Length: 338
Ligand code: 13P
Image (cartoon, protein in one colour):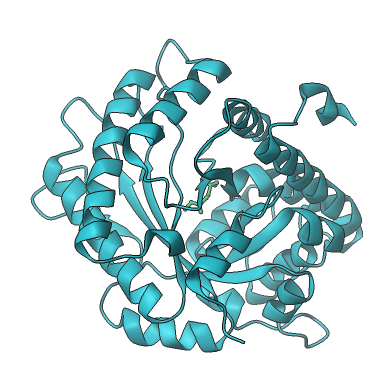
């Protein structure tokens, strides 16, 4: 039976579940491995991802889907089982990052345009055969006193919409990710303003390209203060501002919103998600699609050593559980100590 886009999208944001973003490109995963003194080879990358996907209870109970990188979707576990089959056996859905990265945008210093549309139709058809039922494309919007420009926002949301339309043509649910970066010294109010403009532009572009909203998942930033801003918005303020901007811009037809963690600490990413869900009821499911906020703890515990795998799996299961509770609005800070 082939599942409809709506069914897949709904399963991606099933109650208490969220997404594991394990789609680091080879360059990014090397940076993460450098930090734990581990060489990045095809085998070490495989071993690392394999132990996460084999953390069976966490995968079954808390992880609705996994975003993979091109190398990983083709890789086999040490015993020869395709990694995709391990994910599916846990009842989780394999997904795939399909953008080719954010490249400097000609004529717009400091801004980027995400590439990867050429040949995308054919690549999506192949990824579907390899088992992918959803995809991800990340656009990057940076903030300074003079950026983002409208040209950058419009070019990026147009590309997101073209990507989304191609995904749906191929039976794949698009995760549309317009990430407003938290680098810089801007205030949370400035982040609010840029996020509002970006989301409005994105949903205009999706409408223009006849993208089915019921079969689309949004992956946004939260409305936070820039990392270097002297006054940092607190958890409640972040939650309220983020929900306010979504109520203005995100149609209720979108089944779910899954956040990126974007450099927030593990516990803060969890606390923010929990505080937002406590503001419900909301028109959309609100969950996580964390990379760093799910993987920093297991990476540290693992440190590239086989004998640490059990401890690393425990660390991964703990973060998955905490974020699952946050997606239901039932997390408490003292559970972190358990
Ligand atoms: P982070 O949660 O580390 O921001 O990664 C999520 C992601 O997929 C960014 O594209």
